Amino acid sequence: MADQKTVLFVDDEPAVLNSLKRMLREEGWNLVFVESGTEGLRILEEQTVDVVVVDLQMPQMNGLSFLEHVAEKFPLSGRIVLSAYVQEGSLERAMVEDFAQQILSKPWDDEAVKTAIRTALGE
Image 1 (spheres, helix red, strand yellow):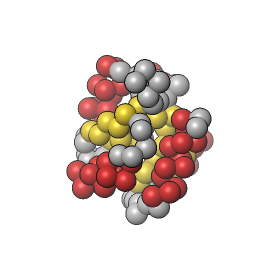
Image 2 (tube, one colour):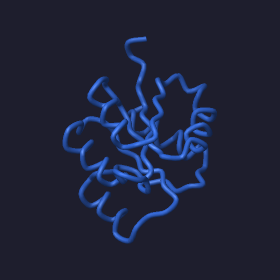
Image 3 (cartoon, one colour):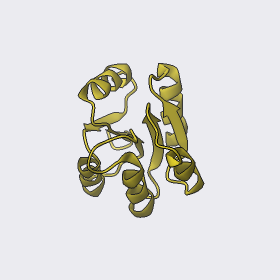
């Protein structure tokens, strides 16, 4: 489907990605799930991604660094943080520097996540 929107999820916890996959499978979006920022950037280079949803706490490349790259190289992609543990200042920096348009906490409310994605997609 040519107008199907793509949502990329970046989280180093497979259980989190599986939960999101189950929750969102009926939404009609093209869902892509990866376990690192490096994989996420590769996906962004290969295909159009309408929204990224990223955890801030990840090994190697943390979510803030990932969002900084996305904001710089793929500014049209919506950016949502979905994170439980946040380093002091990370959220403020993400918002002030416009790396993320929305921030949601784990554990999440299913409807809040769906609404945030719909909003970022302009639905």
